[in-house]
Length: 606
Image 1 (cartoon, helix red, strand yellow):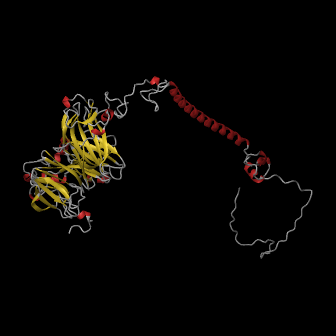
Image 2: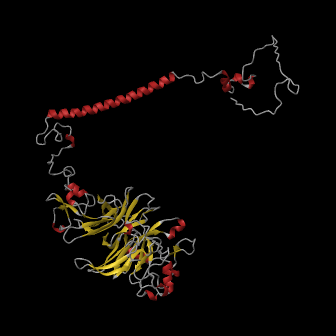
Image 3: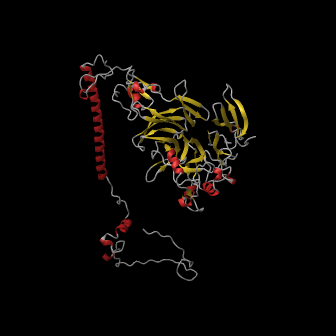
């Protein structure tokens, strides 16, 4: 019945695995409404014919069509990295009958797999997961590369269905510095790229790395040497002795013999100590460094993040240089074309953004691939959730002038000085063509003229060169009303130049008048305000004035024998008699006051 809680769209049969076993046999797996199944097809005929049906897909194909999984077929075996249960809680790297440990977060901790490759005696799996070694410092997502040996046959006794060679290490894609800025979440990888870089042969893997969702929106492209990856897996292990201990490198004296995780002829004969150590110490101490010691390309944008990558390796230029062309997909349907130019030193790498095209309408690009059909030019295959499109690798014919063609800095394109056109170099013999010019480093060439070639050569005839000192002379070849063949007359040119000078003069006069008016108004207002300003204390009563001045006026201080108010005049000449009628209270006292308890009275002193 499938998953009753899933939507109708999720309950369709999504093809998630398609591996070519041989030239005639194709291995296909689908989600089958959350009950994955696989089949083998014979594709040698016009119509595919199923030769083996209803193969159980658990461990080979995800249950959920949206789960991040990867598969690869090598040496007659299907390797898969997915989940082995309906709930998606059992991550697994699987090759029948071997698998990783169940419910062991030290091996796989809720991983999101993004890709896998086959290289020499190893299978490499790239994924991101919550970092168990960082849990004491808080939650963090790290990018990983996991490795197993192709000839792993399982371990002895209880380990007969377990990998004995599974190890993993962190991938370091960061901007270096005292406090490095990390791009921790890997999104996609390229195929193995083999080429010459700074005089040495290397096999590289390019990866797309993003910042966390709640961080500054940014993406980076980092390259990793497979030689460095293998060296890291031969380095020290990392361990946590106790629950609250830090993760530290394991001393060499503690390593069992033979070394855990190494490829051996028959892993079933390994001692239990080596197998157990590899099971409990699958994490390497050192991270895999970026090949150039820093990202090849960085893109900071709120609108989108990078989501896919394809590489056309070692594209030759006219001068013999070899450049990797990176095609980058975004989560809003764009495709970016970037040229990675490596200098004399490995760390000296320059990335030129050549083009940015809107291919899908606000739909994430899931996969990119460079294909070269036998009967047509090379194409870029673009895959989203609902569409598949293909576009040419280059658009040289869109450039109509020499300067446009050279400034594009596209290794696929060159300007043909003989035919006056921008052409593709895909099917051109570079050794026997002296009419081609190109500059992918600076985007400039002495043959191209910035003044004329930037325009359409068919629409504008050549203009005579004019010295800068002749601008104010009577002839004006650039006047709109003048023909290049029939130059302007002296009177017409003088009139036009006069108009220009009158306009400039009027602008200067108006600006000066405005400034003078502002200054005069400010000065006049200042003097008027001083002249008509009133005394702020002229309307204040006598008593407050006396209160305010009692500490400063000599006539009002204590030494002068005066109180706060002026002394009353001498009234000795006349006697003042005043009679008051006061009623007696209950205590026979001449007072009208009650004998009750006195209440507090609020007073305000000024």
